[in-house]
Length: 118
Image (cartoon, one colour):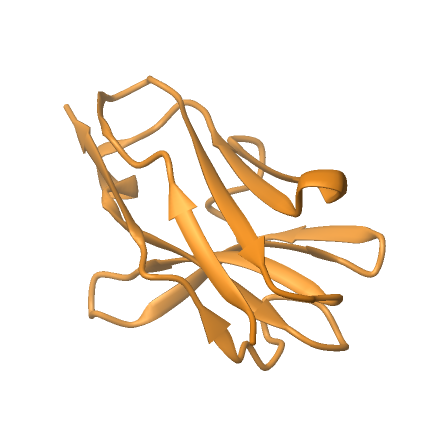
């Protein structure tokens, strides 16, 4: 059983930075990613890491960075130059095999809230 636990959500002003963390509990090897709740309540991909590569949604490129610390089984999402439209609940997700934002993510965390004020 894989359990994902997010942390790091907070309230910040526009232009600020946050680093989200996702701890992966239980044996796991595959694709990890960050998603967020979109404006129509859909989950939209933010960034993924796995297979030795990273992928980003267009809105995240240049501002967000996904990374992993394998020894601690943690992934991070460094978010810089935050905008009010980045306000959302951010979720960590895991999938086996093929890795990008379109992968079949089977495990999800509970989410962490990010609020960006103007």
